[in-house]
Length: 190
Image 1 (cartoon, helix red, strand yellow):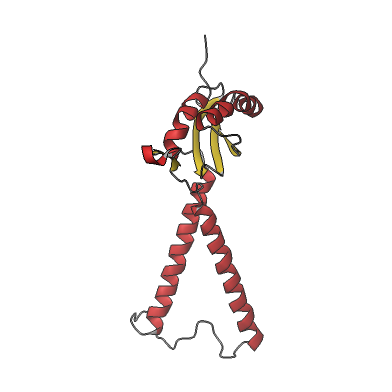
Image 2: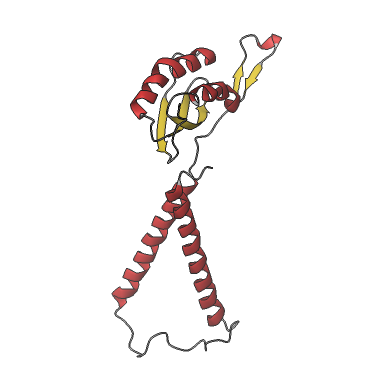
């Protein structure tokens, strides 16, 4: 993965750091409680005073912990969701004469080579997901500072995507495009 998506890296790093701190804290508390660590006495109170809080406080604390845990699990799941699931396409018009299998990466590589030559495109990545009956293309384009997303999109709609649909013998191909912007500039002609 390129370094263009710095916020996602920061998210994952912070999530990992928070998880490690919570695991270490929980492990320390459990080990101290069961007497495996002798740094603190197991019967030492955490706060001064011996009065117990009202009963409703425990329910609020438990509900808050469950909600925080579920939110953090959702955040973790969002970090792991990267690409749609791909399937090998099988062409079997005459099964008795053989079949042809097409890997999704092989199918989109010529398309990506073409898209990378578009003015304003720094890098291109694509995933051809789904089956031949229900295909979907997820396209991530990194544009240079001079790149115009609407011009790139028009070029895709008039040139790149029709050629890909023709090559794959598809009537329609749903496409999602994510534009990312890089600090690099395009090639300059002098």
